[in-house]
Image 1 (cartoon, rainbow, N blue to C red):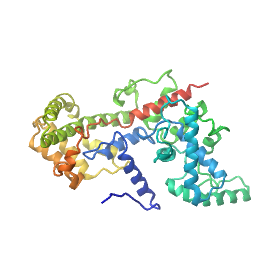
Image 2 (image 1 turned 135 degrees about the vertical axis):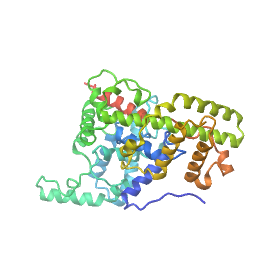
Image 3 (image 1 turned 90 degrees about the vertical axis):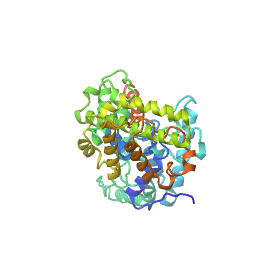
Image 4 (image 1 turned 30 degrees about the horizontal axis):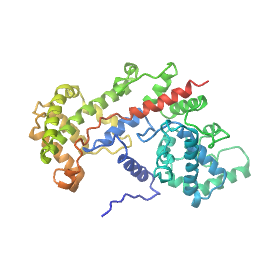
Length: 405
């Protein structure tokens, strides 16, 4: 039977949850074998709101409203909007291919062309709302469906001609007017990926107004005073870490400890799978890695107070179940108890196996031989970065625009 994921379009929250779920299977960081993705994302959203690991270049947050504003001027009907939007994004793609050399990274769809399944508008839709560039809170499909209503509101406003905003949509205006004013007359034919100074100024204003307490905003404000962005492989190794706001520092330390803690569980998980599949080289490798982890990384979790941690991540728009909290707490307990985690204590092994089995059900690699044979040998071992690599890249782009004359 083919698995399907669907939702009723009128349920905006359900649609957004489903889109996050679909993204989950595509994002490189989402190898979430033990079900801690909600905790990871609750941290990432507070540090770098609006970002996603499938974003590429920052100027797309201008391209999308500019394209859609052009469609609004053509009075595209609701029934035709989705098709017209796809065609417009196809023209944008062709313009970027024509204008940017092949060595320029970040053009969405350069390789896929007309077969591209996830358009830039879908990739950046959440960011546009989070940063206040998109005024409504509707899903993309709802936005298409409301085209006729927006056209009616604009017509009514012109008839009244009183200059006031009506409804919640500024008389049918779905996008920040200042963002639209930045659109060049030659768009999209002459578009390129590099930001201009006014665009960087606009983004800083948006970040400051919508997420003034985020690390994204703090770093952008700080970068105004530097000739070049500092380098850091992990956010907790950032040269300005000691200057970050206290609450941000606490959240990052939480993230560092979570990364260290669940890495041990992932190593044990892979050790157990290697044993079941008779892969002696993998058994030796993960046994050694677990020993190094217990010696070098686990001590960082000794003073971690989960009672203070959970309030920082619960209620942040991501599902963190009681089972997830109990698993993380239980794993920390057995690991810190001095049990032979490196060798795989019975309690540690049981905890990991039960967790994976509850999450995967009939597809558990512990009971399903076919699923075990699909194991690649390193399940769930990708480090938790909390979107720092993409945030770092976007901030460097922002800084390049900021330093333009």
